[in-house]
Every structure is written in C-alpha cells, then in structure tokens.
Amino acid sequence: PWGGDTTSHSGQAGMAAFGDEAAARPAEEDHRANIFDFFRSHNAFDMLPESGKVVLLDSSVSAYSAFCIMSANEQVAVPVWDSRNDQYMGMLTVTDLLELVLMCHSGKAFDNGCVEGMKDMTLHHWMTSYPRPPGCPDVSVEVHPDDDLMVVLKTLVRNDSRVLPVLERDVGGEMLQNCLIGQVSYMLLFRFLYYHEVEDLTTLSDALSDVGIGTFPADKVFTVQASDSVEHALSLMSNHGISGLPVLGEDGTLTDIFVDTDLLPLTSFALQTTVEKTLQQSRPRQSSGIDSFSCRSTDLLSAGVT
Image (cartoon, rainbow, N blue to C red; front, side, top):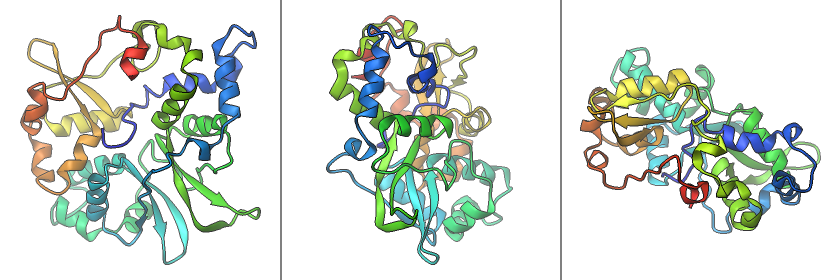
C-alpha cells in the first residue's frame, strides 16, 4: 500500500540475510551465490522503473503540505531539497509523520493544535531542529546510479533504512543538475530480483514458517486490540521501531493490520481527533474485512509475495 515498503524493521531481516555474504557458502549448490552474482551484475539505475514518478519537496514547504503531497502521490518517503542553499537535506518519511503526531498528542510540539502547528512548521525547521526518527536515513546516506545492487542492499541494511535516494554526482563529489534519479527500497529490490531470477529463488518453495524472515524468528510479536487507541498503536511503533501491528479482536483472532502508512490519508482531515479514537473506530472499512489479506504459516513464500 501507498507505493512503498511497509515492512517492519524486524521484517527487514529477510532481505538483510541476503546481504550477509560472510554467511554464504561458495558451493555451487547454494542458490545465494546466484543471487549475489545477479546483484553484482546490475546497478541501481537498472532497477528503477522506466515510468517511475519522482516527488521532490522543497524545505520551505510546511510539514502539513508535505504529508498531504505524500498522501496524494502515494509515497511513503520523499527527498527534501534546500533550494536556498542548493543542497539535499535528506528523506522525509512516514515515520516523521508518526513522530510528529505523537509529539502533538503529548503537547510537546505545538500550542495551537496539531494541524495548525504542522502548517506553521517548515520542513527545514523539522529536519534541522529535531532528532531524526529511527529508520530515517542520515543526509549523508545515498546510493548512486552506478552502484551495484549489493552496494544498494548493504546500504539499506547497515543504515536501517526503508527507502534511499539515488543521486548522481560528478567525479569531484558535487551533485549534478537534476541529480535526483529516483528512489530504491527493499520492495523494489526484491521485485527486480523476483522478475529476473525467479528460477534461482528456491527459497520461494519453502513454507513461510521455515524461511525465517519477517517476524517468524522474533521472540515476541507486538499486537494491539481493536479497542486500543490509535495513539497506543503509534507509541508501540515508535518505541519498538516497527511499522505494522496485527489487530486482534476480543476473541484473539486476527481482524486487521495497522501500519504507519494508514496515517497518510488522515493528514488532510481529522488527524488529531483520529489519534484519540480506537483502531476499530478509525478504520471501519478495514475492520469489516474488506481489502484485508492473510496467509498461513504453512503457505509457500511464493504465494505470500505474489
């Protein structure tokens, strides 16, 4: 949903395992060797969609307008450019919105209400006056069009980032005009691998419980009740670095999943009051089971990703 990767930070371990070359055996029968060779033989530019849309925000834009633009363009992360100083400032992500909403709700951010406060705050002020939230890449973290996909994967893993910009620079390190080429993410990386090397992905034939990715290896899976407040769910996400929570009914059965990107459509209306509602009240359509998908631990990974 919303054009991006909604995998939790713990779920990123699945792709991170591919990035650990030290754990890979050089034996020909190990399919990971084929994957590594594939990653080394393609670069970031190869992976970018031919008709991809690039959204770039100026740092003078208000935080409120920025998140409305992200919602309208179905983007979970967008690069921010400081036109006054002609420099790249970093990525604005849905995690920024989550942290801003929690600050508003706690009364630590604005005196004139959440929405009005976000309208008065520029992106420049937000990104320079507050610590960057977990999962938001530092301004120095980027990939380049000629970087091979192993470099892309390792950069994502080592910086605990969901999305990174692809920037073009000259030999002296200076950014070129129109330097923003696109964005890369775990989901884009996996899709590129899947559509080109599906026959080598023997892991796709394994059951979800056997693959060891996502939250299956986790000691604890955080959940919320449908009667819990949106604020409680957001606090869990913020405190534990996750981006999605299973929503359980009174009988303990799975009824829905709440993800951080669910905040984006609420930016343009009722954002502050929604935080105080229960998850069921804030998501009546989803809570009815419409547009909800699930799978079992015995299902094959190929069924889950396709």
